Length: 190
Image (cartoon, rainbow, N blue to C red; front, side):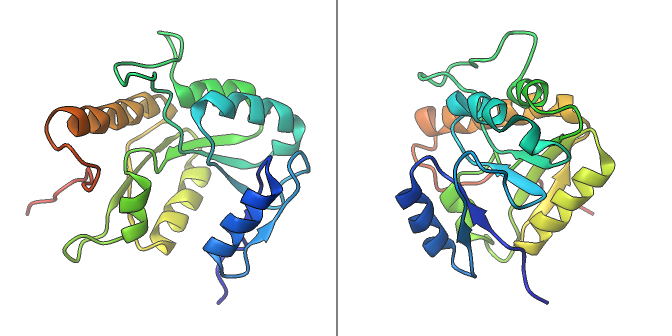
């Protein structure tokens, strides 16, 4: 059974082509501003740009599943750039069409650690949060297809906690671990 079709979209067409080539497996490039081809849209842009991107695409995202991998962390890694009574995934949900589903996922692990995969034979944990059970089930299936272990943390407001986990990781890098070659996960004990 063939895997999912991947479409890479960027404001910079050359970057999109390079990323599609790196992804391989028949990945294609799309045109920035044109409707995304897929039903699952991974928002792989910095938080500083994501709300503009979601707003620009507008109704083209209607009915889509938006996977928020962003972290709305300030430049000195001491807090967040979102309003105090909100969090990144919620701001994305506000900017998205009402019938788009937002699921927070993939934001608590460093990208190169995720790309490396298993650690000592164990899959890495991908924490996720979202309000729609069917949307989360689709993200769970996608996470599993990558050889990773999905860990559902609950409804979308739990995305705030996941964003805090990313901030925790950056604090560990700055104050104790001093590198990014680690992962956060759950150890299950009998």
